[in-house]
Image 1 (cartoon, rainbow, N blue to C red):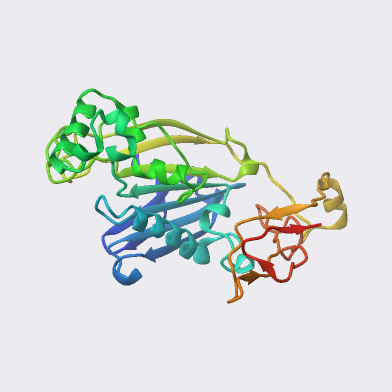
Image 2 (image 1 turned 90 degrees about the horizontal axis):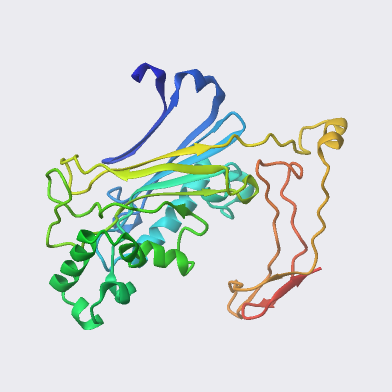
Length: 333
């Protein structure tokens, strides 16, 4: 019942809202609760588009939830990707576990055991990305009516894989353009946009049916690939109050193991828990961003831990390599 749950935190940005509930019995185990907003609308400041983020610890597990409303329309794929990056960066400054030490070097997805990313992401089905699945020549797909009809045919055939192969977000992730290392379940149901406000999935002609409403997640590598298990993913076709159909998912999340760091620990405690020594050498770095007009940079490596402080109170760094050309490769010994 409702009394078994309590509101942990609520965040809002104009008509966007994000609420996190916890079981009443677990409320005392939830701590370090923070929230942040990122407006990415007109001029990068208007709140009709953007993201909301809430983070907290539940016992030994750190969690972040990010809800987004990204740029609309088929041709705004690049803008959607850029909005994701902006939200990841801006929210980290307010809720990030290492927001002071990181100073912009870590985004919000890189500072928690698990980060859940969801909302009206507005990525579209574009059969030109998967022409073989569409069975139509590229020229035919340039016509909106033909494109719409081809997508409708795939929906009626329940060819979810063909629709999935034509999804803009999936292609952007494969190209490394957005939401790296985020996972997503299989959408074995019709696209949830743009529908008539009635029961069932009946699509409006002016927009290509698409999976705009998404749920993704990303876990810290050290937490293991089995720490998060998605147990359900479905739409709710009976809801008729919007031109979107709601999407929901459930997950099982394993509690994170308790780790002890050097900072704030006694020598005896540290010696009892520090059982691994890692030595790194001959690291190489490519894709260096030029930092001056000569095209050179002074790269170095910073080592962050999850949870913070496992290597001491400050962030260890390697030596700085001076004057490396951005087209070259930096190697540290």
